[in-house]
Amino acid sequence: MPNLSLLLSQLFNGLALGTLLALISTGLTIILGTLGVLNFAHGALFMVGAYVGYAVMQATHSFVLAVACGALFVLVLGVIIERGLIRLYYDRPPEDQILMTFGLGIVIVEVVRLLFGGISRRMAVPDWGNGIFNMGFMIYPKYRLIVMVIVAVTLLILYLVLYRTRLGLVVRAGIEDQRMVGMLGLNVQRTFMVVFGLGAMAAGYAGAIDAPIVSVTPDMGEQVLVESFVVVVIGGLGSFPGAILGGLIAGEIISLTSMFNPAYSQVMLYAAMALVLVLRPQGLFGQEGRE
Image: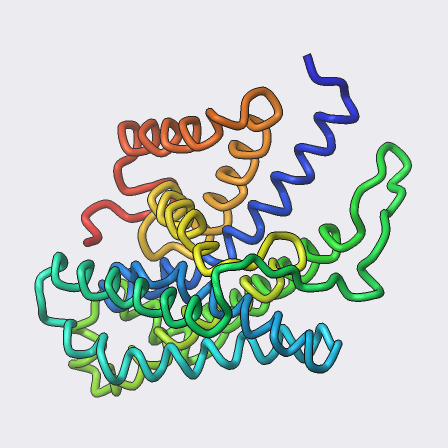
């Protein structure tokens, strides 16, 4: 049996992973809920954010600039993708959207592999994030604690944007009823572009923040994409609180299961998703009947 120190360490690892999954899934669930698009390129956008952050960090040694550039680059990329490709598929069957975004993700991954090669890269931890922090009952890597704080603040800002601004009101109305938003005279197409850009930016921002913790490789977004979809299913389609709670649940399941046997961490995650689908098909915070 694991000792208390190991249990606490894994609980904090699960919290760090969970907050990051919550941030990535927030972008995914907003896009899915508002646009109705299953964006299978979301993991690739996460990876692009990590690579841009890595490249800027190598050139400037500024972590803040690296994260800002990673997020902004993916924001612009997301807007270009929405205007040039995604909007052509709004009225197409879901399977067409899935195939298109899946193919787009492959193209993005291969372009990055062509530019940077397949060798894994390591983004340096900023000087103020190096070392460990003594919490009295355990010691823990300082950067992981800082990541939790950064992500928590970012989620709070996203909450304020979604629930305290006019843009957020339109986005939430679009999640409930896209046709009604259009009938009210609002520019739905522009809203869709902004929503897709913000959702993509959340993925790129998370990728840049996560880059000092993991190895930066062209395939790093695959696992994140799968886990993010599980989070959306657990939390409920289009639900911001659901993405946060789902992310935390997923992070703790993966981390605590890994403490006993890492091979079963993904199995337990899917088992939890299946249990939620049986007991509450719309997810923990989803609304019944929402498509």
